[in-house]
Image 1 (cartoon, rainbow, N blue to C red):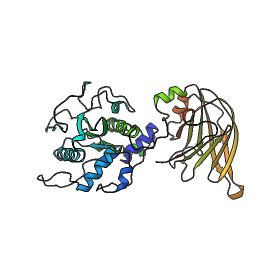
Image 2 (tube, helix red, strand yellow):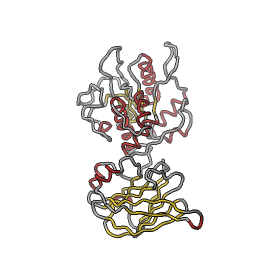
Image 3 (tube, helix red, strand yellow):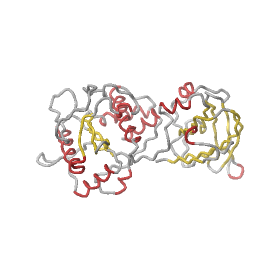
Image 4 (cartoon, rainbow, N blue to C red):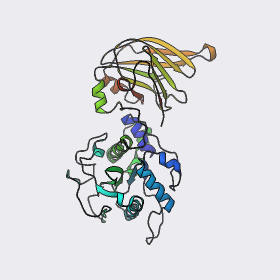
Length: 366
């Protein structure tokens, strides 16, 4: 799980966080607050005469409340016999939790989950999916078994409640490829091969789950990496504020940024290495930065269609301390800037859509 979260942070600009421990029982009300839960087959020795997964009545009731209330399940397994038992048991539990309101159905390749971040016109790699409409196969809880030696996986199936997608069931074995990325990510190298394909497919599922209107994610407005936002801010100025030395995280101290005309932003995101503010009008501004108890000011000029980059660092201690601000002389186009600073995770704010003069925005880690 940590590898998927790190991939999303490093290669998509989405700051994904996960719980540090797995939940082995579904009884805590705290679980109802999470926008997405992952369910994978672990190593268990369960007699073949018993269900592979067993939930108490209270757990099934809470699972029903979670899915009806905006939660999302990401279920993934493979083709092994134990994995097939796992998926069959899960379908039975979902039927108990959702009853006549729920159903399973094969997701067509035109479904939004295949285009949430990366575009897959014919389904995820490994799927034998044709771009056809959803088929009516009778029972709303029908889920075909994958026979031993069957070449094509069943692929992605949706868990539905009414007209809402509340989860997906996959037999693509995506999660077992993620641990292979640990060494390469730690070394700063991009993942390759099957690991990359599995991470990208999982990214689409997670992004779709997080951006659903009925989901549990806290929404701060349109994200800067979405195509419609980029087109809306094209030609406007951008300001990148980077902590120095380059690559340093904000840590436990919130970053407060003020521009003339009253625009104020506060970022309290420990893993971020700065702020990227998109969609600003061009012209001369005074930039004030408050960080770790110190403050600094600098005059800047924002240019249309260019990124103005300013670094900041703390200097001195106590009453003799302050913030040093340095503006990079060269202003880059957004494409050149992203190429040069692609290894940095900056918190992005859609200024043209979220901020106006006199409006204060506070952004915290989820």
